[in-house]
Length: 136
Image (cartoon, rainbow, N blue to C red; front, top):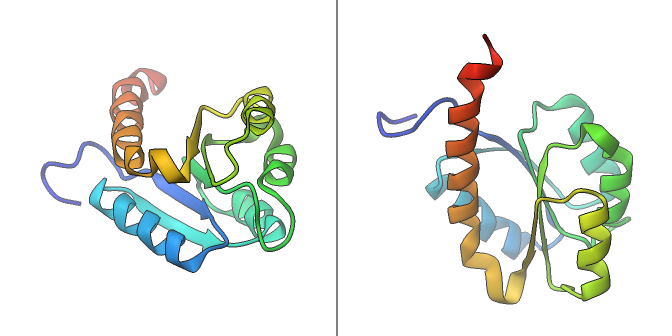
């Protein structure tokens, strides 16, 4: 962590079935100063990772090699970390379903991809402002 980085890094679980997209997201996250704890490409692996890793941020594709992002959200339940859904299937019904799960951000990969660093930076600022008061 460099001197300009506020607080500890966010721990990210990246759930993406396209190796090319996963690599690009990892590059964007590295530039944003976060740590990718794991990258998985299916629902069962994502659920396991959420159970054992200290995930602060879940970046989730909806269409996976096995299962779906909605299955991950359902399994995570109320203990779900802050979540960014990134999908090529940004249909209104998917956006509404994600909203019902409490997903904080819903991004269309085709049009919103480059917003990811800005969103992550905002989450880091909020976390750094809130964390000291949580420990008092």
